[in-house]
Length: 448
Ligand code: GUN
Ligand code: FE
Image (cartoon, rainbow, N blue to C red; front, side, top):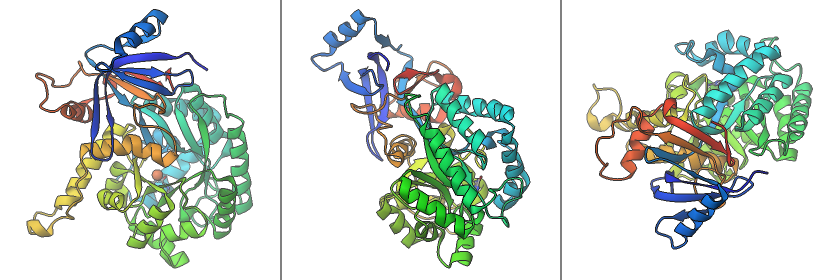
């Protein structure tokens, strides 16, 4: 356990899907377990006394006028091993990219020195650019997958990690494949046990996730047995769902039902499920996902390459589906959520307005689809926290003290006060880069 302390500074955080809270001079009081126990504003009566009390104890961290606090981001879907090939071969279709590039790379992590090198790099890179919580796919092999969890633990990132299940001999090469359905499940069980052994070791938390790669990579026997394990363990589950036409049609051909319905049949759609991508969900799928309380990890950059479609985020959200944001390294090439926020807005505007200038203006787009920066910021913070069932994303009492501090004196065009306070947040979201992030804290611990 740490020591209680307070940070004094100005902050933005999402209040709800559409609205932003701004605190001009806030005293963020953090308890010895890393949770916010109180937020005292400069207009509150006890403000002066509280500031002085922390000063006296030497436990006050006062930020400068050029610094702004944002909540840490949640990356709801990222393939840690694929960091080594980020920026590579995105011009190939998903199926080709998987077979020619991704599977050979993922098999390399059996070399634990290679795993250590890349995993340290990807965790540092994401953490230092504001991702305080990440939900990772590791690889098919258990040992390097456990290493990834330990590295997250050691570097201070809150992490959800899955050993990838992929046993289907026709879909996966022999060198990157579970030996059998039974061994896929028993390796997953061992993986869960090993991560449970880390419980309490890292204050920010490192958790196992049940991870069938996607329907095409798993045999029916494996999906049945892994689904039973998921029911018994009640852990988080992550998989890809209806990412592309190819994937969407695969489930229809094999199981005569949509990808989401097939996943549900095996027990993989629960309130702890994260479905990566999912732009092709059909109306009944959306109802199913909403009624089960599962979440979508929206991967806008990756979708621009592999999905061939834009997630109708506004529509799915309005139908009750919780949505978080994700980089999908390396289907998306950029490791930070700033880029995902920007792309979520851009893609949605193209969906809304349409992109083919030869069509009449009214025929071109899908109206009511535009996602605002405030919406995307909500997904990158609160949406991610909801998907994980954790108090993340707000700077209020009871939430984890996960923050990033931005030094806005570098590189941002700030020449006069903005008309509305949230316009400063918008400049930060659109124009800052990793160099602006001067501090990162996770569960009350400074990690950058
Ligand atoms: N579907 C199955 N595996 C993957 C993967 O690694 N990346 C993406 N984008 N889609 C997948
Ligand atoms: Fe993915």
